[in-house]
Length: 74
Image 1: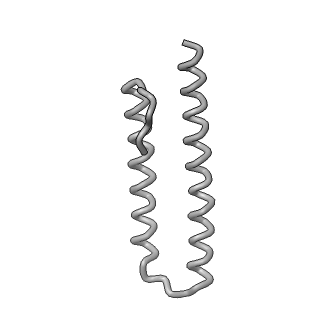
Image 2: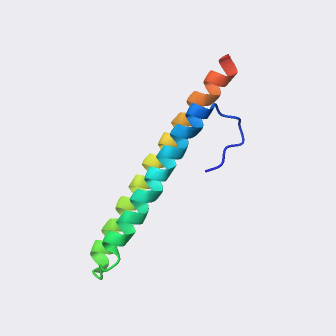
């Protein structure tokens, strides 16, 4: 997830860590679920993934709003 604003290195590290964790969790979930054939279970997993994506999106929005407010106040 590239940022257009210059971020202090500690924040870049934190974002990179969160991004790496999210990618690893997604990859692990796909590996765990690759043999599922039941369409109801697949639909349930897709809905769970959508909820998780919304959570990640909110976290990124909060982080960026916090960062921008700190940058503007400095």
